[in-house]
Length: 271
Image (cartoon, rainbow, N blue to C red):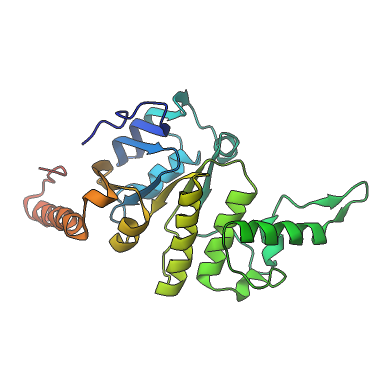
């Protein structure tokens, strides 16, 4: 696998080196190496239980690694919490979105960040509506009405609002998308992929996107990483790989898993 630091600290906004994580007797991550360039969209693929979500939670400050190093802009950091990671420019849109169905679009955009009329403690609804509309328009999110509960919106619109909230209301220069296309139809997935493409074109943020659909990853990401059994085993530019190559790697992983059930001993990835 290529050296994750080969491009130097000037280009890499994030570097993960030798990161490990255990949950009791279970090893979730084994010496993971990963890097992310400024303005890059990195697709992170892997089977259920391979370690994708654990890695994202370490980068977002939710979990602490048992070993290894995390560097931001070339400086080693210890991410103490989700709030600490956000203060350093890392934000995550988790699969559950953290939206409140009963609240409107603009209320969710300013959730826990409500603006007030000073000196009176009154919520500045008009101002929040104006800023919400401007923020959604700026990144091309098409939501006709912002004064309706988000429960009435499609899955793609809800996901887009969650991403827009992260972009608009934080100083993030690294955004982690935890399976943003899960359980979406083609039209809704296209909405999110268009949003990712727009963010990539603007170069405002660097993105790591967990996904299962190879077509989505190859069409929207600059580079692809595959994680297997807690290790990154594959790292290539999206234009230099294919669905066939990725399928072949995964099929081989299943073959090893089936052999392990017969022999009682698992072979390491790439064996």
